[in-house]
Image (cartoon, rainbow, N blue to C red; front, side, top):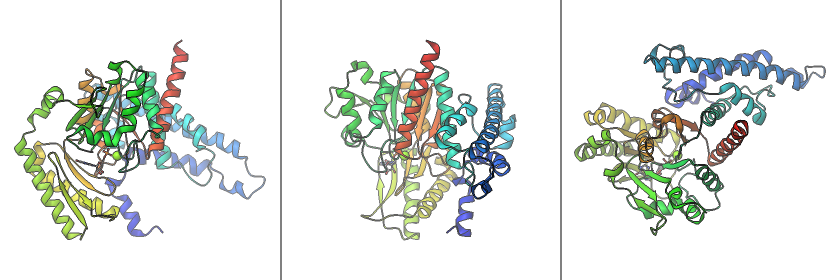
Length: 419
Ligand code: IMP
Ligand code: MG
């Protein structure tokens, strides 16, 4: 049942993506005007094919117009005036784009799979628009040349929440296919461990598969893990027992990251820990505090499940407190809801992706794709990756596989065109 409370809760801006909502609003007009719900019970009503072709044309026109508005925004970005674009007036939260978006073609592509235009009762949804945006992004990336770097979030993107990447996971072969095509791979995860063994335990299926694959040794080293958002770097190493070698921070830290002092890190984590303890007490949560070198979080006591509202409340409180603190202005941090835990990490995924780009010799944002599940503006940790590169927002590991198949299919089409 949709209670008034739920409706208002969903209206909270942190649970909305303004660009997607805006596009959804534009598509609602042709849906209302051209869908034919009465044809279901009126035998001489318009045929579903005819209605679908009219609706497809109208939706496609809208996507073409949005594509042009994005191009105009990119022109303003190039001129150093992104705030003056029309898109910025329409969707104030919109950030910079690293590439144009092939929205028209992507809509036709997704419409073939999801039959959006055939629907007479259900208008184009959040998920329809999200998937069109993903396809538009990968189309633009593939069309404009090689995709040099693909970074993946871990939980929910590569495997189910809290699980491991086992050999039977279909994403492994798709990642290997990308590596064989020359893309570098980064796994940019919040999971923060200081030892290679812990990452091996989570990712062994992929690491063993790379070890056994017929690939030159240098190509195998094109896989890195950036853990704790942007705190620990491990590179594939065929000769280590855990198939991973810790890369010392001096070798990969960006110059801005050298300014993150140990005393600031301790101070920020102390403030976060105090806030988390406070919320646990106030909300009567059955939680354990976990303090690490570069993170602090709460995890449920055995068998407990926190409700979404409690997790979000916890994140929003700690985020606000940190934003208001002096150290929170100096030091980047990321507070997020991990599904059944809350963590505050030092740094964020924009730094994680930037570090991957640097380690692989300076790859540009327009040649990098980050795939993740957490893109809401607060309480989500993949969101920050948008500052470093293009992104795709998936909802589960199956969608990651579908996206990688799309990339392969589009790549194949592109190769045929240029042959
Ligand atoms: P991601 O989806 O790959 O970014 O992983 C997020 C999950 O990693 C969180 O929900 C936590 O359960 C887990 N995790 C383990 N250690 C850490 C840490 O140090 N910081 C944040 N999350 C952690
Ligand atoms: Mg995730």
